[in-house]
Length: 328
Image (tube, rainbow, N blue to C red; front, side, top):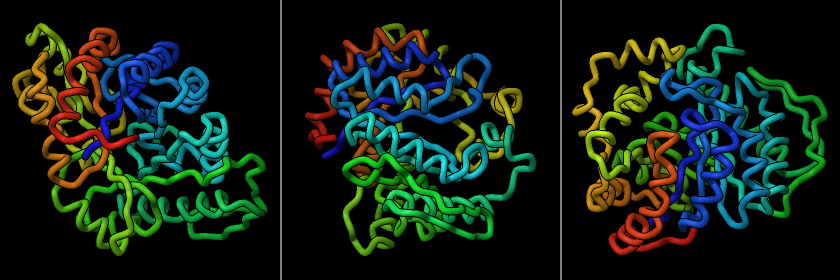
């Protein structure tokens, strides 16, 4: 069984539109939604990047039952981990416990605005591990003081905590990150259906159950050529993969890195058009790899309204029939 979510893509829509999209996603039958936390879009053609936490606060009041998650927040450069803990706890209270804090080691694209020099991934993982420790302690209540290699906290306390502790998810991409974070997190987050991730994650957690969340971009449109063009214009950066994408500093660099990527190249990895079976086939590798949750990304800020009716009447029923429908 798999639970299908929706992606609030802040790089391709403004804040008011994102709130409206969240409402439409809930009406269409999506049980949960993830939201990117970026300072900049990957490509200038995407054209947006509002402050995610403000958007999620508004979404929490504009929806009734939609689960929410950051996908993902970096708690080490733009934000101090103690501040991330406060934001997450507040959002969990506002949403009535519907929020999961998704964390990651960050991308140069977003974090260089406050980080200066961009450190190597090993150092970023060290910083993230300290941040998770701090956030976990603060979620437990009481006064927290912490002195680490990268962060210090002096007598911090969260004065508004939700009834139930905020679940923490961490983005992983291989054995190193799994061994570092599996025991510290409640949820595994990944962008690719690597069949080795889930078994390694479960083994590192001694079989303790947890959600495993993936993400799949699609370009839904009755006009296949329009779908391919839109996917190429806005999502050709996706072909670089996480290890490359994490290092690039801005939209100009992403444009240069993807300048030779053709629309047909993008269409080979992203379902383009209105084929329900193509979406089912694209979700299948995640299910076979052991993922419990997959968030769809409909590419194009102006292409959401045409997607929601199809999602409600065709896409979500077909995915439920193919894989079962796990509650959010």
